[in-house]
Image (cartoon, rainbow, N blue to C red; front, side):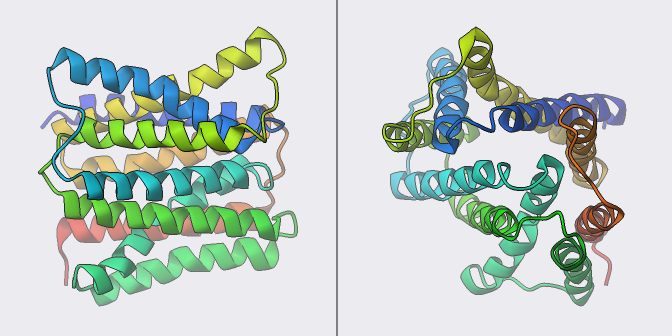
Length: 282
């Protein structure tokens, strides 16, 4: 195991995702459907290029599951981008990270898996963080919070569908399907909601979304390849810290003590769950 390289890769990954989140926040006047479109089409260039270079078929084996994963994923993505227009970007990111909890709940009914008692306690800590955000932080917009949590619910469903796909598909084929369908959906929904970018900078930022997203995904994958899950997974939540800092110092967003406490409780519950699963304690 190469822990130092894993840490380096995760730092690059989380910074890339934080940059993508920041661009989304900067483009607050742009339609969320346009953001979905540009986020997807610029990543599609990378995935299509990779599959062509490696001579891997873009069509995959289980088309129904690939399409389902893509539709659920684009729904989650759209809801998240919509949420960033109503609540601080760091709060939206932390709420989106509730996805593994919803995935665990769905797995009980859809995959017949069992959740340990300690995991329910960790989930309760994370959900308590949401209640702190909603009940005690008066700066949190209820509609924005709903959109972010709904995004996490659909993201949790993505975990389930990917679990069903298993190893029957190349990972880049799965991402390529997602980016292709997201490009179509985002493009169609943008027709009646188009907002012309103001100048070359906004055009550049729109296309940078896919670049940041692609490299964030690539380096996260590299990190998991060179070190164990329990060493790497908690580092994913650095994205929240980086994004909160950008929100504070670049966009002048307001994070009260209650919102910081709520975010901390969400991340704490999720990190404890990752640690518990990795160590398989009873």
